[in-house]
Length: 68
Image 1 (cartoon, rainbow, N blue to C red):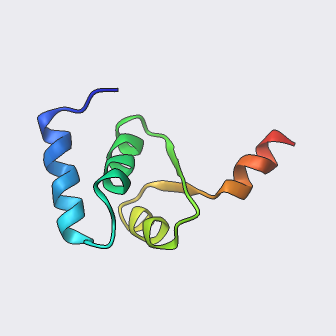
Image 2 (cartoon, helix red, strand yellow):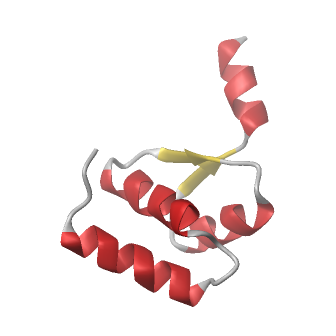
């Protein structure tokens, strides 16, 4: 998946808003939004921030439950 200039700007804005998150964390939020998908993470800071941005967040245990 390639990111547009708008995506890169949004990633930088998110990272400036929540400096504890890495660029990779913020790009995961943007990519999840772009594909209307869920973000899978067990990182509490990322989970809370993504939820505040209306991103559906799932934990790793959810993945295991889906496999069963």
